[in-house]
Image 1 (cartoon, rainbow, N blue to C red):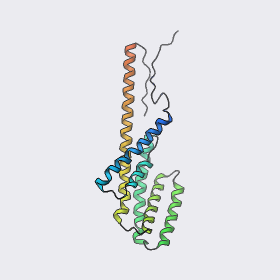
Image 2: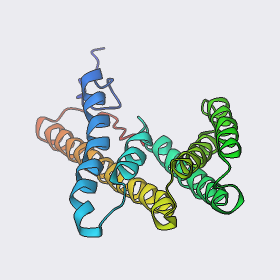
Image 3: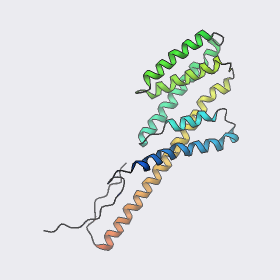
Image 4: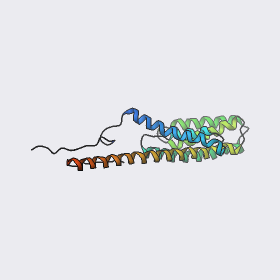
Length: 198
């Protein structure tokens, strides 16, 4: 008995995206927030836009849940590391031995935790950044504390970019599915099973 012909859409669930497309999407997910931050810098007078750009770029992941998890961990870690670092403005701003000793411990913690605990690594890095800036003579609490706000800005823009790109991809897949269904109705071929994926 002859098998019934079926139309099978060639979408993300039926074949793997080429490597260059995945790389392009990752690049866009990092580049779009960076451009937005540069535009917002003169408007909101950001102290260190590089901090926001770094946060937006470092949370990029190939999967939406992965990006969301990295955003959450980076915000939590930075929000803890910065206040601990700022405490050294009171505890030992003039004691460089104490500052650099704590910096060395922070870098050790960063290196050990980075592979599996991104939140701890982000907290350790923010802590080390505060100490090195204090040791170099920086005493502006508003500038040091802006590490948190600008990290938050970068993460929010990265999340919005990710959400928009995911919505556009789902929209394109839905349109493709509707196109194949319409084509199958017109040709009388037995409908194929579609899967949009997550």
